[in-house]
Amino acid sequence: MLSMNANSEAGADDAQTGHPISVVAARTGLSRDVLRVWERRYGAVDPMRTSGGQRLYSDDHVHRFRLLAAATRHGRNIGLVAKLGDAELSRLVAEDDAALSRPGLDDGGLASRIVDTAMDAIMALDAPTLDRLLRRAIARNGVPLFLEDLVPALMRTIGDGWATGRLTIPHEHLASAVVIAIVLETIRAAPSAPSAPRLLVATPSGERHAVGAALSAAAASVDGWSIVYLGADVPSVDIATAAAATDARAVALSIVYVEDRATIVAEVRGLRDKLDAAIPLLIGGAGVAGIARDVRAPGVTVSESIAELRAHLAREMQSR
Image (cartoon, rainbow, N blue to C red):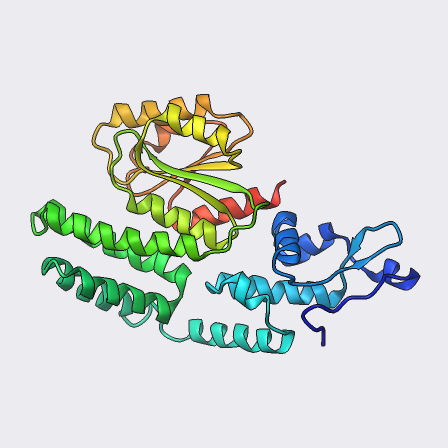
């Protein structure tokens, strides 16, 4: 079994059997950038080298990268799991797989029960109870399910309460503040390697709901992106300027509620025009469906969920 830092000088036989990083990327689904970061920053593996200095990875290295990828998909911190040996890492991944096979957020009504309890706390303007409830949900179900399932379900329920008059501005603001604080902590806790690709996240001018942007940023940070989070209601010219200044690989916009359709469409189109043509613009959120036809263009991708956004970002990370 490969130890955490197993290594050998590659001889002639190793050169024939070792794999270049392009093969490892294809076999693991991880981008070359992520593989390099995990190797250099976290010591995930210690590759062999040819006499010419080229890195070569063994089958055991490939297996270890697959285990690490599985662990991080379950919400584990790469900085922590990279320190584990293969046997311990395998046990951890198996435990996570088993936990996910048990009733989760979408099974047995757990999501609706958590949302109902959260709504009780929101109606009582009880921020500490809401905070504890949501943090327990993360601990029990993991970060990805929290970001992709629970928070969107909660925010839809809050939106329904707002529309029917059951909730007021204080209720909505309290809930948003608690959720955003927890989500931003998730971003800060995720490892951010200097060489990681940057994703700039914001909402366009006229969109003041920041929860969707925060969720997108947190989900991307778990997947290895370095996040530049600008928050809500940012003019397109400022987003484009920030993207250029930070050398962003991609830009993500969240649009939850379209109050002024013409303004939002103009901001999205204007941003696409101002961004470098090589930078993809990804837009998502509950409000996107009503404007998707007007903003679709080369270089613009519409995501209908956090999971779909993550898939788009994974392809983008692997494309370069």
